[in-house]
Length: 156
Image (tube, rainbow, N blue to C red; front, side):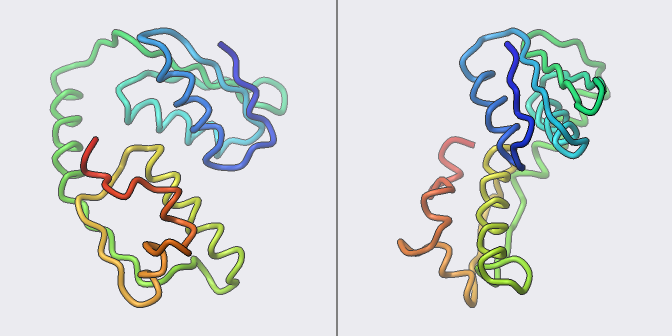
């Protein structure tokens, strides 16, 4: 399957790849992106989810080939994966504001993208502590309530 994600901003290429991969038990998804950061994000996503990824530059674009299925890893790689999993369970996220940066509209967009990216990469913290204006993110009027799972620990 080939996904053309050129021109799409972060985290859309990863979200499209995750959607396609979730529909198959095993197989290959190739994602075409137009910048190196998106290619790196796709490779990181694959690695963090136990898949392999290969990136090739094709002209101005990058093609990231993600393979889902049986992979062979050494005992050391398996041990590192277990250490990473244990570290994720103890992750605490403290959010003291509802924006990133100083410009309010852009800052709200960036904050929403941060939470969407965190969810896509499945790097959910054990605890999220909201204080000051960060509390606004958990209200019905906040942009984040619809973007993030209100109970991230339920399926992690």
